[in-house]
Length: 159
Image (cartoon, rainbow, N blue to C red; front, top):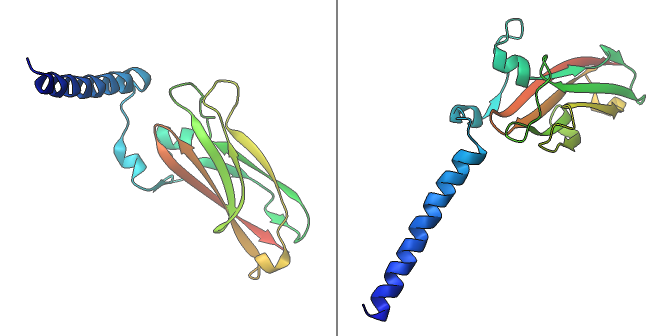
């Protein structure tokens, strides 16, 4: 065998071994098959009164006062799901973020361990000019590594 043939076969073998190793690693570290359609856009509870099991554990739940005064701080709690989402090394929430309409308010990144529960409290102050109609919509988003991006919202009055 000449040197050129040897190098070609060695490179081809290395590439094939690399692809096989990657496929094995993906199956080992991510053994749960995921529904790829959940990653196509933003997921929301289709019927908030009758949520599916997936929606109950993934749609963000916002808790805040029904009415607030402009310029005064208040707390917004955001929990991932009515039944709090689990945090494991193979199924976790990457972040939770809060916005007022399209304006970002805050974001918390989480680690894929069992030490944290995906529930966050944000302290928010809404200026009068941010609510000219007398109400705002709080929007929470969260990212699950297996089930994509989820969104929940809550309207509050601002006086």
